[in-house]
Image 1: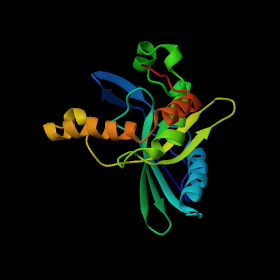
Image 2: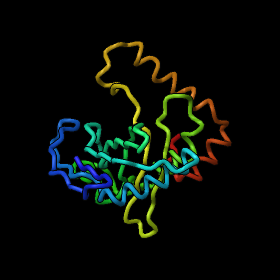
Image 3: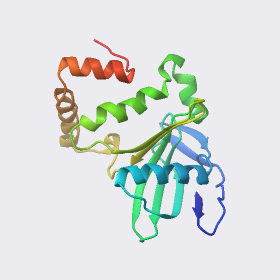
Length: 196
């Protein structure tokens, strides 16, 4: 965990070992907290429409990491309110070794996921994590996606069949929210792979 507040310097956490999909991997905490805090402050000001001073920013590796580094952020504001977020780092050096070995290079295009959150998912039915901000450095050095952290369980651990039945219904409603022409234009704009 990394904690950075008005009085303390950023303190990097030691590595932690996480188990994902049967693999154990080493995950270090994300980029330096002062930089994350600076970027997050700008995104939150745009999201809320006004500046909200951050008193403390806490980060820890997420147990839901799969292909890229995923960190859970807890933002504590000076008014004592809190906000729970996720920071997905889609940068090349943030891809886990197991994912790098399994995924062909042509599938590794961070802009696809960023563009899906930017242009496609805002039109989705209720249930998608809201995008708080997207950071892309011109050099391509990093691609950060700040999302709200939503409560819930992974579908794979839910035993109730009704939950499984609702999932394709949500996906169908999402697909119906676009005409064929809209879907084609959005897919092209976002750079998505399209399958027949």
